[in-house]
Length: 283
Image (tube, rainbow, N blue to C red; front, top):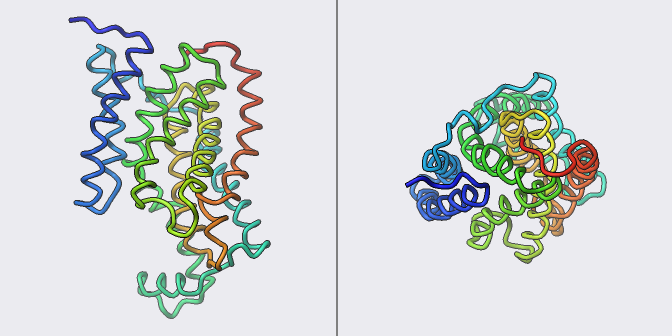
C-alpha cells in the first residue's frame, strides 16, 4: 500500500513513532542512567517515518553548511549563556564561582595541586572540546527528528513564524514528562513556573535554529547549536555557579534569566526570518 507523502501524513506518522518509542527511551533512562536512548529515539522515529513513506534518508539535511555558519552556531549559545550568567553573578542571584565544585574538579582530574584558576580554565577547555564531541550522538539523534524531518515538513504548509513556534512547542512538550516526573529541573520552584520558562527557552532556541535551517538547508548547524547550548550550560556555567536561597528562580533553562536572554536573540532572528522567508518555504 502506498502511503501519502503529504506533510500532514508525514508529521502524523513521525509524532506517532516518537510517542510510541518514548516509553522505551524513558525506561532506559533508569536502566542505563543516561538520557541518550530517549534522545536517539527521536532520530529513529524520523528514520522509520521516511522509510515507510518511501523517502530517502538523504533528504533529512545531511549537506555540510559553510564553516562560518557552523562557528556561529557554536559561539552564539556560548555568548547568550555567558551574558545571562554574567547578569546572574552581578545581581547576586548566584555566585562566581562554586569552590566545592572546583575542589571536586581537582580531585576528578587528579590535579589537586593546581590553582582554582587553572582548574576552571582546563574544565572550560575540556567542556568546549571533549564534552562537545561526546554529546554529539545524543543530540544528533534528537535533531534528525526535530530539524531534520519536522521543520522541513512544517515549512511546506506554514510560514517561518509558524514553523519556528510549532516545532519549538513540540520540542518542549516532548520534555514535559521528564519534568513532571522530577527528572528535569529543581525541587524548589513550582513546576509550572519551570515549565513556562523552559518552554520559552526552547521555543526561542527553535526560532534561531529554524532560521539557520532555512538559510543553510543543513541539519548540522542545528546539531552544533544544540550541543553548544547543552555543553556550556550543563557542564560549565551551571555547575560553576554557586547557589543561594533564591537561585533556583533564576538559573538554567528553568529560571527567568536565561530564557529571557535567548528570547532577545530570538526576536532578532525572527525579524530576519520574517523578512527573508515570506509564505511557505521548503527548506
